[in-house]
Every structure is written in C-alpha cells, then in structure tokens.
Length: 260
Ligand code: CO8
Image 1: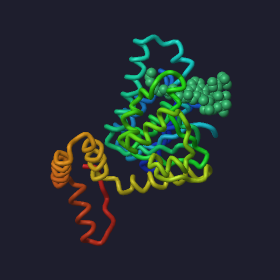
Image 2: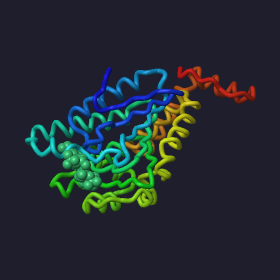
Image 3: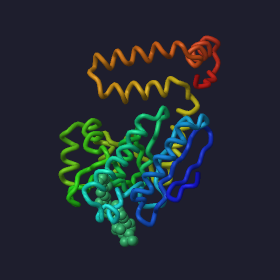
Image 4: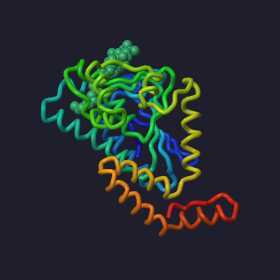
C-alpha cells in the first residue's frame, strides 16, 4: 500500500517507519493517523519484521503534535472522534507483539510526545524537545498522554509537565525517566538501529511475551501480574523457541529462533 505521509524501510528484521510531513513538522492529521493505523497493522502481520523503529522526517521534528489547523475547525463530536482515532493508534502500538522504539529526532510535542510514549521505549537526539503544550491551546493531551506519562514518571512530574506546557530538553527528559538514552543528532538513528537489530537477532517469542507481560501486567494488581507472568512463562515451554534456546545454550551455539 502506498502512503502519502509515511515512509517504510525494512531490512534485517527491522522496519523503520518515518512520519513524513515535514512542511507541518510532521503534525498528525486524520489522514496521517489513518495511514499510521494501516501501516502498523501491516507491520504486525509481516513475519519478516521483528522490531519497529518510529521516527520523524526532516531535521526539526519527530512529530510537533496533532494538526492544530485541522483541530481548529472541529466540533465536539469531531474532537471526540479524533481523540478516539489517535488513541486507537497508541493502543495498537501497545498491543503489537513486536517492540516499537521511538527515535525522537526533534520536537515531540503534544500528540507527538503521546506517540513516543506509546512506544516501548524512547531514544532521543540532543536536539530533541519534549512537552505537552495542550493547555496553552485550551485542551488536554487526548491521545493517552495523561495516562501514559503519569504511569511512566508518576503523577507529580506528569502534573508539572502538563500543567505548565513547558518543553524539556532531551537530557532533562532522560533525567525524568521519559527517555532511555540521548545521542548526538547524527548518531541517533544508527544507535537506535543497532539496538533494534540486536533485539531482532534475539527475536523469538520470549521478546513478544515479555512485552505482553509488562504492558498487561501494568494494568493488574501485583499478584495478578505475577500470575499472568507465570502463565505466559508456562506457555513458552510449549514452543519451539524455548526448546531451541535451551538446546543451543547446552550445545554452546547461537540459537536460531523461528517465532513458533
Ligand atoms: N499543527 C499544524 N501545523 C503545525 C504544527 C501543528 N501541531 N506544528 C507546526 N506546524 C506548522 C506551522 O504552522 C508552520 O507552518 P507554515 O509554515 O505553513 O506556517 C510549520 O509547521 C513550521 O512551524 P513553525 O514555523 O512554527 O516552526 P518554528 O521552528 O518557529 O516552531 C514549534 C516550532 C515550536 C514546534 C512550533 O511550530 C509549535 O509550537 N508548534 C505547535 C506545537 C503544539 O502546540 N503541539 C501540540 C498540538 S495539540 C496536540 O497535539 C493534542 C493531541 C491530543 C489531541 C486529542 C484529540 C482532540
């Protein structure tokens, strides 16, 4: 399928998905969100893809938010539908069986930061700026940002960032626990690809089951989370990957996982 606002490149088990609307700093409009949803479904179903890297086109922005020009014309019903459309994309990334890594190369604001937060972890360029300016527009983060940020860094820091609308530097976002690692701008993509390719090489069902246990366990009590983890652990013993992984260790060779 051809996309107007997305670029997709695949190789070595990694798909790089680039939001490509640089004339509007990659802002998310309805068309782009629709394309993202289709692309993510496609990547989930593509057995050759083990890991997805999400980034933004151009020098300046990862994604500078939802499209303000488009939102300015919306009525209440359309605003609600737009928020639901965005939330579907965020939940889809969380539900995907493959890790999704955000490579935040510039501004990640509003819906752009929400998109990054829906990824499994974030790497950022030293040039990146992250924030939620929604309150300055008379709205709130509506693509899951209030929920994902407060779960990630706790309510106090989330409150400060969302109530003030200020932007954090990449280093500060790293200190706050939003970003895992900060790289020089020219190194960001290569370093992200290195990590992604490493995960893709390990591959195997262990990675997707671990993602499932972490993401779903966060919505459970600790006891239920432990129970869920144990049941996924047990299921893995019915797979070829577990047999191959342990046989390879005992035979002192590298495992060849088939994802079944
Ligand atoms: N939407 C639409 N167009 C945008 C956006 C955006 N979010 N951000 C930038 N653009 C456009 C600008 O309008 C400009 O277009 P043009 O050249 O046609 O005038 C072009 O991109 C370049 O931008 P600037 O000239 O402003 O570039 P600067 O380097 O001067 O500034 C900034 C960069 C600081 C990033 C600035 O562009 C900015 O503040 N952008 C808006 C950031 C923002 O407020 N984002 C949050 C939007 S709200 C949101 O994301 C809500 C999500 C939840 C929705 C829930 C459903 C209802």
